[in-house]
Length: 149
Image (cartoon, rainbow, N blue to C red; front, top):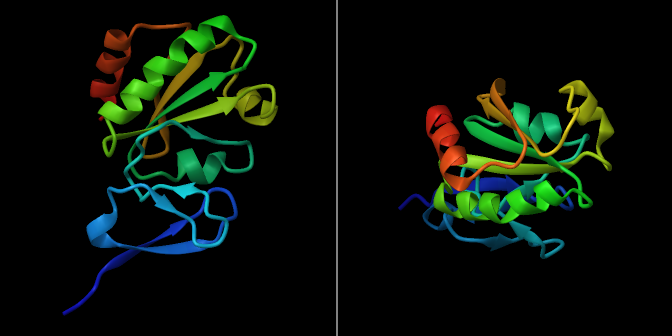
């Protein structure tokens, strides 16, 4: 009997972890740093991305990604956060929802000409396909997600 597994890189310490294919939908912990890791394609919560990891975490991701450009001092950003948390749970396995703090990651914000926040960028297989600026309702965000997935 052949045992299949996937190899998942820990987002914190970058060590490689083997996860049995039968358990890829479950929340896992890194064997080295014990931090949470998620199996490929299944993200139940928004993931934090940085300038250094944007290429791998968003542009190289094979599927749909919604990226929230935000800052902790931004009121409308704080309004969108619980909506994105709900959408990450509702659309787990269909779209990856990522957040990038523009104060801590100015290179990526500059690269995509982010002039106001929150700005939401929608990527499909590494290609930018749509963008929204400002706080939006869950229903409106779901319409955009449906158009991308």
